[in-house]
Length: 252
Image (cartoon, rainbow, N blue to C red; front, top):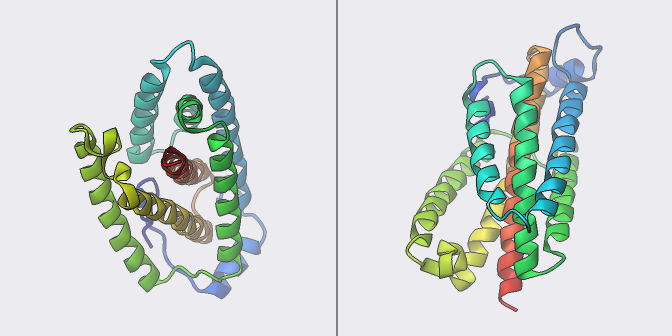
């Protein structure tokens, strides 16, 4: 099974039955092999650095407006390096977390200033709620990742990426007051909602890939790749929520 998350797309793990999956995941840890706990711990470490970075980004953004641009470029470069690096590097993953945090903190500050004091807080709460709900639905098998699910998700993802790219290009020509297609009334809101939905369902794909990687007995070091991939999806979800809330507040 190959994930649609570009971070996980470097990995291919076999699909196993539900019974075999439960036996391996819930069984005793094999020395040197990946476990769900490993992924949780590494993800927590990356998010701790994102929180620290976000604090500095938020507090220094007013006095250093250029920070958001430098942090965005740094996070993008580190994200690409981590995504395509064959051998995962814990140091680069942690550095990405710190730089991404700087960018998110600065971005959140400026959007908060422009569109409402509670937008960043609402986006954080929305991200955490979406994560918890999707994890619960995945664990209870309300949502099952099968061939049909993956096919529909892939079509929706490609369609959204094409529209997002076209919107990005159009924003340079003043479309939607610089927001691109996202600033075009009801269409912009629909696109934002679609982005939030896709980012949310991407979490399910990540959960499945992590579960399958554990079942395949991948090395413990891959927990850093899993943590990075999950972080990328959560950052995407947060920024989509931030944009949606900004557009909705801008209509008031």
